[in-house]
Image 1 (cartoon, rainbow, N blue to C red):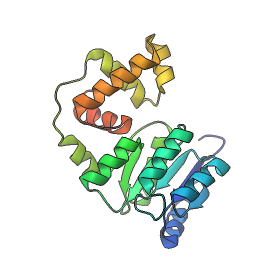
Image 2 (cartoon, one colour):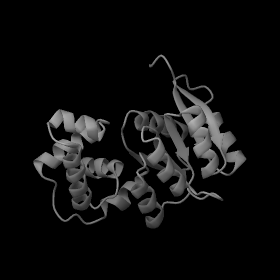
Image 3 (cartoon, rainbow, N blue to C red):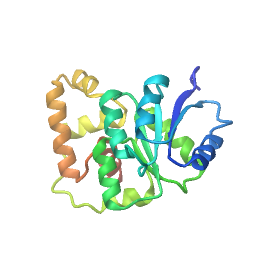
Image 4 (cartoon, one colour):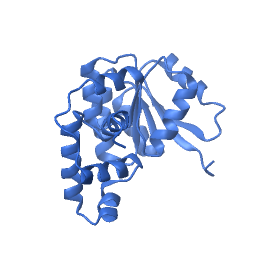
Length: 206
């Protein structure tokens, strides 16, 4: 267990939900809830103030909604991992969240152990998806399989490596890494790194 606990922020416009989620982490030694926010704008302010490692983000909130907040967080704090926690698993909601670059997508009926595991996995650079969301991604048609080089890049993504680290490991430029990932997304029919890893694993490519 790390010396310092993972720092978690909870973002939801319902106080009762935030209280319930905080309670699920009260006695977890390696995860500490350092902030709460009731909308996207407050989430951005609290992220700057507290520097969480992981954010549990609701999608539908007044003001700046979840997807808008995710986009801003990813732009301003790319090191922060965002896991969507919502009651909605429609294709449109999933697609928008994945395109924004989330590390995971869970539904609010997830048991506490699954939430704990999701936070740890996201912090380590992994991907976490609710079964219904994974099924929706799996049902998307793929044009073709990624090339061996593209799979090399994806394996490093699955280990939590950033583009700069992948470029250094494979002796290629960051631009080339981005190009490979763009091709991987198109071939797997996904919109984000997390979704690409999950779909590739489900298809036995990783």
